[in-house]
Image 1 (tube, rainbow, N blue to C red):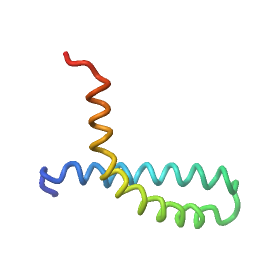
Image 2: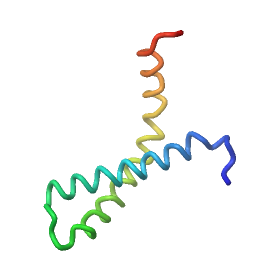
Image 3: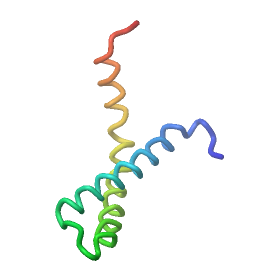
Amino acid sequence: MIDRKYQKLVFSFFMSLLMSCIMSLVISIFNMGLVNNIIQIWLNAWAFAFTVAFPTIIVVSPLVHMLVSITLKDE
């Protein structure tokens, strides 16, 4: 198992993996339709999307945490 000190990195990895998977599938089907090679098209799009999504989440997540803390009121 991975040490707890890497929680943010592991969270970013899985979040980007799943979100890029879902979004690339939806966008591939939307743009191409259910063509014969949609799986290959989607996997290529997913590989590209993940390489963009993972570093983006690492960079953007501190900003999102700050915006959430500003938005939510203290108890």
